[in-house]
Image 1 (cartoon, rainbow, N blue to C red):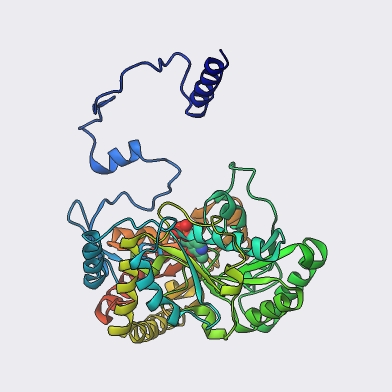
Image 2 (image 1 turned 90 degrees about the vertical axis):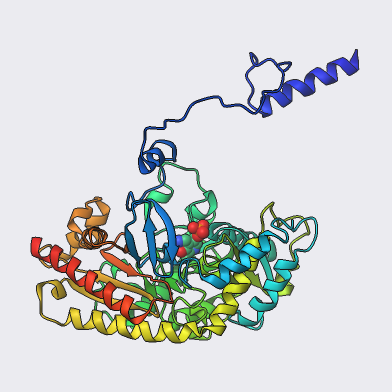
Length: 490
Ligand code: PMP
């Protein structure tokens, strides 16, 4: 009697967990491997995607990417696109770098899924031997691998909370850390990532980043020193007014603010953050998901300042297109987490690890950083020349900034007031007042992919780091034509 009651209680709770309706008879025979619906054969590829892929994905173009090689993508219609996005800073060695693809293919025949909660993955250990020596500080000797950038940010937050036993995280105004629940709450570049999806993770406080557009009173030519002083005093106030040091586990910063406007953090700001962290037992987390792996001409941008992060977050370029991310920290900190508290089915996938090992080796063998320096010089001199050219197009450029091949161009439409050309345009969602989205569309018409960024009027150049001189010349020419076409209409 009792046994029967236990069984029926168990099966009804199982039904609830799996969401099966009561009318679904549990005794029905298993379905053969057969279809439940017919998909339309009439739709074109892009239309099929529009019909069946989540609408929440915003998309710049309707191109269907079939092949990628170096700086170019070929579509299903045979159109060749010059890719100045590198898949949002991922394929730093260009699409399908032969050494990376070969390493991944070889790993596919060895073992694809070497599960990390069950044993060690040889591919991961091999990667660690390449990765640890190139991390930005000798104290970063212990790594946790994950899949996406957002997951790695979450791992950093978990580590910071576990290690300090404190709950709160300070982020930068304008930051981007991802779209998962925790990282959407940490993202302050645009409201769209969290809007309507609350409640998001609590315990997150935002403070100022030294970027002139973030300060109402500041102008394009406000000195770096002034912006840094303002930002650090805002942070001190945040620690007095919003989250006390005894409740603050970490401050997280993108050493180059990415989705917030492509603004490198001045070294003095990073040093200021380090000092405040040291004074208050707060951890400093550097999110180098976008700015890492040679993107800025430095392997990691934080190195440029000499500031030591307690936790480094990496992703994107690390495996040149294969999903791999992670955090690096010192062993003393990482060891504070209990075994079992970290991990995940796909954490540090073996194929992605093999691709990452090959990526690091190719960086060294092909002297990629030298190419970044040369192409960066080429791009900056073109942009500065255009800005100073006295032409209608050049006059639209307000600021050219960045490092290596992480370069931002900010526009100012002088016909509009500063308020409407920048902040208000974003606030009232009137991108037609902004120049950057129009230039992007003109570039697309000319078969070049380029991205805008932030709520401000900013374009970003983020090409593969392997782009050659002739491709960069071609890209600059297309950009100039596109900007001139926009300028003509203003
Ligand atoms: N941090 C930064 C600085 C990023 O730029 C991004 C992605 N743009 C992320 C985190 C999130 O990475 P992912 O999209 O792989 O989750």
